Image (cartoon, rainbow, N blue to C red; front, side, top):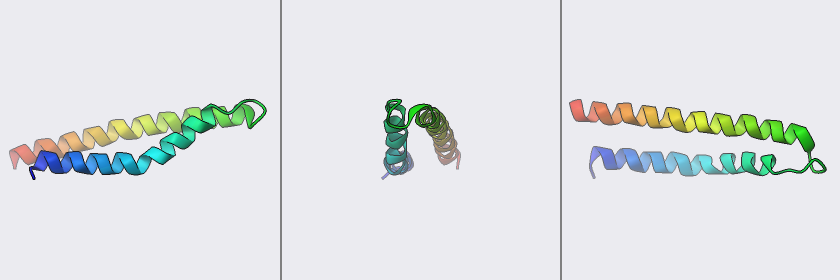
Length: 72
């Protein structure tokens, strides 16, 4: 298995492990005013932004590892 394949497998594993957290925030975002109201929606927005940021940073870290693998 190549270095790039190993990194893709690592990314897939991390994303799969993190998916339930993202789904929780999506569910919170769909809560009606009667079920939890504004607080749930605000927490959902925060969580979804944190999840997006996590994925961006994960991609950047794996890109750096891939580049290092090509140079060394």
